[in-house]
Length: 299
Image (cartoon, rainbow, N blue to C red; front, side, top):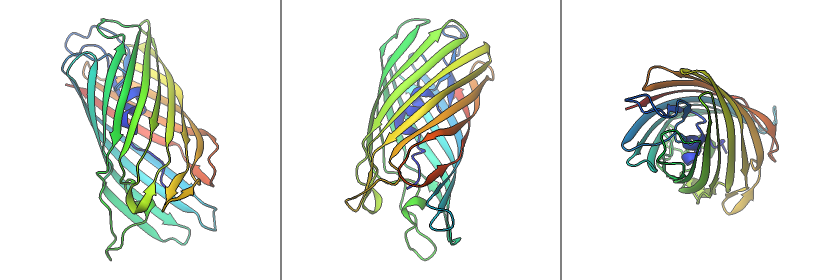
């Protein structure tokens, strides 16, 4: 099964794995000067933001020369969020994907279109109501919803599960996020998110998973930030036709590094990479570094 490179139903919203947004007020540029992640910033009433995030990844499952299957994908996430108050934010993410699967015998499947969308709600439970809070604590509740259609080849045969653009299942998610601000130059973010998918396409059910992300950011200039951190995923066995499949279960830890540019008061640009450093998954699987770029507009 392909890796879970969805918007993480609040994970990226919480810790900014793929996008960023300025936390200063876009009209007066006051407040906290840290360029924080989309979803980790200080919300205020009627704040609206839009983001476009591009990612490219490649993964190989199986033994080279025997049964290896290579997956490649280019993905564009279109995200919008709205904060009606200073403590509540709702968001929607819609992914557009282009995926290729190639087997060791050179058999090839290509899929393009809509992936599984994600909705999330963020509740700030500590730190709200202050112009420059030292910390924000939030609770995230969300879900991945089965919006990806089942795709077929030219002969009207369904593409294989890995070639599909999502598992086609409903997956509730729940997590906690923290953002800390230390003067004008340093900030940090961390989150924990759990997901429990239901059965999806072809009787396949992804295993329960947990994701822990932490990062620190140094901002030498008001318009420039650099950050580094680690995201770690622990995934349980999947179920295929009611039978357990542990081939992709286990632990995967990746280092992340980003550069964030402030393009005026309302636009941010992020470029970065996520590189696997600890892979303790059960099956033979190799994941290459994920390249990320993102543009965020604060309306």
